[in-house]
Length: 306
Image (cartoon, rainbow, N blue to C red):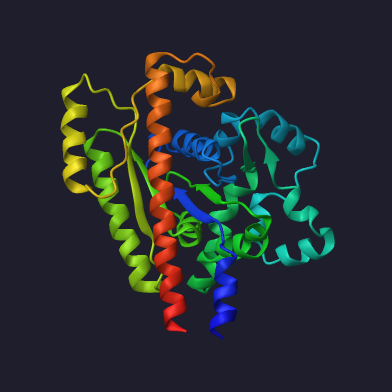
């Protein structure tokens, strides 16, 4: 029995991470895109999953949204990310075979793959709410990733979640077990971070699902302002073990997103852009170390128990 468990653990599943805070506009999708590319530049095979809403901001970051919109307009958008949560997903796979999963995934020019958002996400929260069993309601993404995505051989699966706590969010946290929280310098962001910690504690208490707060990423930070300096100090005191490197406010990041790429794809970035790129790379390396160490601890516990 030990050898069977050990063999299965040697086939390591991808590390999973979700980006989330219960607030829009903090740069959550930007952080997800840049961490994904930074991990890819460190030779990780990365899949990004966009659950943040039908607007498809993650796809726009990589210049893919026109292709996604065309498939929707041409009625060639089935299956899509919303269908993987449905009871019928296994039947879809039986009918389409490997194409069912492969058709969900788009390649980018920055060495990461993306499963794009879809308008079907709009009604997904309500549909999940109609499922009586909480464990079934919140574990559907985990089931999909485990059965259909893990065998594809990705090193990291990074899930971008909605900026609101709902059934889709809980699916992402349940599946990822690691969460990266982008925060801006402000009172509301600090309180939302505290609320997230409470929610993670409830998930552990109610369902035995331990979700690690793996990294807090101060984002859009202007060190020239007193406010930013004060909140960085507070975040450093409150989260000394998980605080990532602050990402500077940069028009170049916004311009790159509007043009359909990240700052990693700029040949000659400005000083601010170069600084942002370096900070994302440092955070990606630290995040990789943390989630791998946590995974090793978990696997050791499983082997020891058996």
